[in-house]
Image 1 (cartoon, one colour):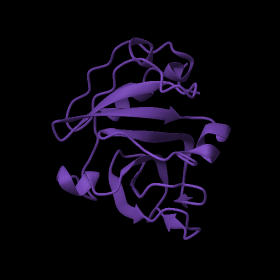
Image 2: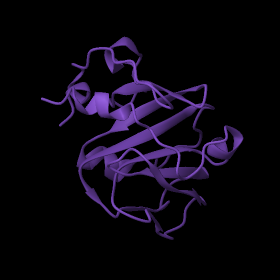
Image 3: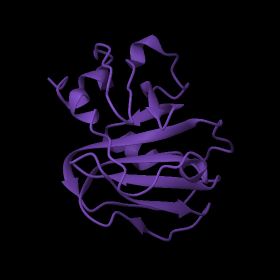
Image 4: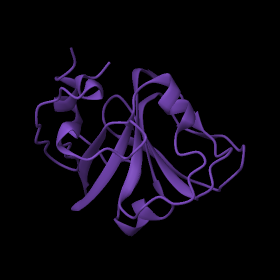
Length: 157
C-alpha cells in the first residue's frame, strides 16, 4: 500500500505532466479518502485517491456533482487490463487508463448510469477519472506520459 494512503508521504515534486502534493497538507473530500494535487498540462487537478478495494469499488458512485478540476485516481499494486463502468454514477466522466510505464493507454468517455464496460487497451496500474471533456479541454491525449510518477512509487513502504 502507498505510504500516502496512510498520510505519510513527504512532498514530491515530479517532472513533466504530473505533480503530487502530500494529502496531509490538503483538506479531505469528506469521504475519508486521501486527496492530492496533480499538475497536468499546466492545470491543477484535485484528486481523491482510491487505493483499496472498497474505495475503488465505490468510485464516484451516487454523487450528483464533481467540482471542476476534481477527480479520482485509482491505484493498483499490479498491472492488469482493467475496466470501468458507470452503474450508480450520476455524472458523465472521462477515464484515462495509465500503464506501468506511466503512459496513458487510452481515454474513454463514460455515460452516467450505464453498465457498458470501458476497458484499458493493455495492462494498467492507474486510472484517472474526471468530468467528461476535461482531458480534451486541456489537450491531454492517449500516449502522453507521466514520467514523474515513478518518484511517487519510490515512497512506498
